[in-house]
Length: 306
Length: 311
Image (cartoon, rainbow over all chains, first blue to last red; front, side):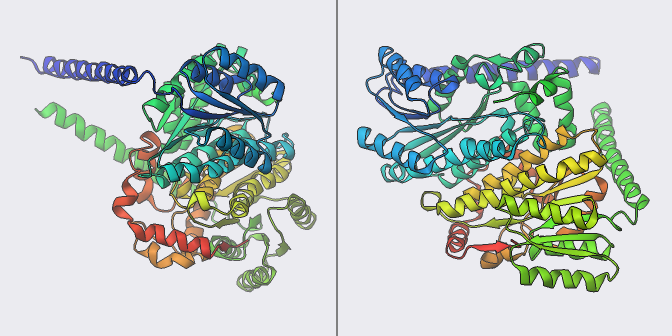
């Protein structure tokens, strides 16, 4: 036999084995998901930023699975509407707590009312987020403070408030909805990126600290999602090879990650690889932004407001 | 059999050759500007001790003009005197600054521009670290770490950037940490702030491409500054190198001259960073194995004795 044939055989069989392993892992994953269809039933789940976007979709998905919900956001009217929809979709009990996540007393009130009503919280989803795009020297300092306070410190403080109860019970799940921007920083969203990097750091540090305590920590990195946050740049992103997920997809993947106790998931594999590259070869990874995003996305992001 | 071996040799040869080439290019870049820092205006926050102080002294040796900022005035003036002694012809401006106050940051930039007209290099170095179990973490200490380590750097960069962009020249240096890529437990807010600094540096570098302003992120690794003083014995027993601030300063200045994106003091920690970037959960158990209760104890000691570095 000539040698090239042997190399080809080896390559083909390795590819086949890898493909087979991937199929097998998907099947096992699906079986694990199917084995406990009532995983979320009667679990108490607290969601911040639940009035719209990913938070709203998570509330509906959890309601359909029979979870008890604590919904927090600033606007009470919107929350009541979401709560009514959750009840009609099958949530046994929904508590609405209007909360400004940047205010410490409001977070204490939220914790207090949730524990009073349900006695415990099984799953905390830190979802509230706020973005203001633009070049760093153009963005107002108020916006910088606001993004760090809402996206980062709010979730950190709420986690701290709920943690003693989870530790006492020896179980609980903390879910941080970050962004791929927390692994691969985009230009013209620097303060948003710093807040999301901070959230990734929070997740990593806390997960290692809580190792062995029975409390799970999961990080969700959505990429481009159909929410208000990216309404301005949607048209530009659509022209790229990057995908835009619906909020339902993000909610679905989040619940799967919680049930399987995954450490971290990123919705778009292409951006995930860019994130890896960013940590391993920062200068090389700068190219990823140029290559993956269509021309004009940076400019669109630069002009973006709230 | 010879073919696979030959191609392996070729791959290894190519990698070694590329690394060698990069090394030569870097050396040539360094050799081209031996006086890179002479008469450059450098603003350093947290300059009263640790890495900030070491950077000030190393820059004074190279004839830079310095703007030194920190909270502790006595120590700061002492550092300034050292710098003036080392290099009598270089100018040193001392500004007492609490970096967590925006008004004081504005005053700092105003004074620096009044005196020197421009700022060539901004080094966001001020940082504090406390430790403790997260559920019992002092909220004031939590906020302070994010304000001093992260927000101050963001605000100060915002203030200095327009001047740099107008001149189409400048260099922003953020002192993050290996903990900005691989967060350790029992000092959660510190890890958060250092991750944030890496995000700031990455985003800014991509934003400022082609503007003439360069961004460098420093990840020193364990350094024998006041920050680790209460637990220095614990650090010495860790499986990581413990640096002197002066060593880190030398490395940092080299990285700034080369315009590098990121610098790790301890390259032995790089695989840890890479593995935790790709498989975040893979090394979670490592603490229990390599750093038993000693590490936890060390961090707990810190929560009793919050030490500060150069602020």
